[in-house]
Structures are given as structure tokens and as C-alpha cells.
Image (cartoon, rainbow, N blue to C red; front, side):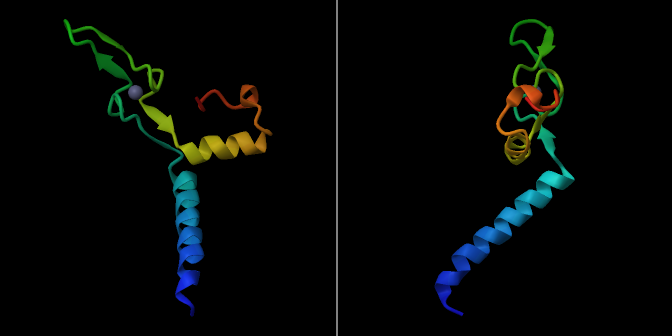
Amino acid sequence: MPWILTIPIAATVAACGYALTCLIAPDVPCPRCHGQGARRLPIGRTEVDCRACHGRGHRIRWGVRWWAGVRTGGRTDDLPDWID
Ligand SMILES: [Zn+2]
């Protein structure tokens, strides 16, 4: 097998793996609040909703959001509200 074929094969395997990951776990813990959904303000003990995940504690993977956009023809207003 010519070595140049390993590049598209590796890309296909990576894309399939990512698609599978999106199917199994479409959301990931929010990196900003570490899945807590809230952030403690630097001053005092006040907690506020995390702005990155809107207090949900998780974020939708890029691939899931992209696929939802493809399915709806790029109209983001029709997307489910769990996709931000
Ligand atoms: Zn968050």
C-alpha cells in the first residue's frame, strides 16, 4: 500500500471516531465551570450562573452543533434549546 494512502485513511478513522464520540456523548463538561454550572465570584461567596454554559454545566460538542446546523439548513433558530 502506498504510504500516501495512510493520510486519508487516518483522516477517515479520526472523523468516524469523532462522530462516534458525538453520538455516545454529545455534551462535555463545561471547561469554564468544570461541570458545576456556576462560578464563584472572586470577591465574597456569591455564585453566579456560568456564562459559557448558561448554568447547565455542560457544553455541546462542536460536531453535534455543526450536524444540527447541517440538518436544519443552517437555521440556528430551529435548533433545540440545549444547543447553544
Ligand atoms: Zn460552565
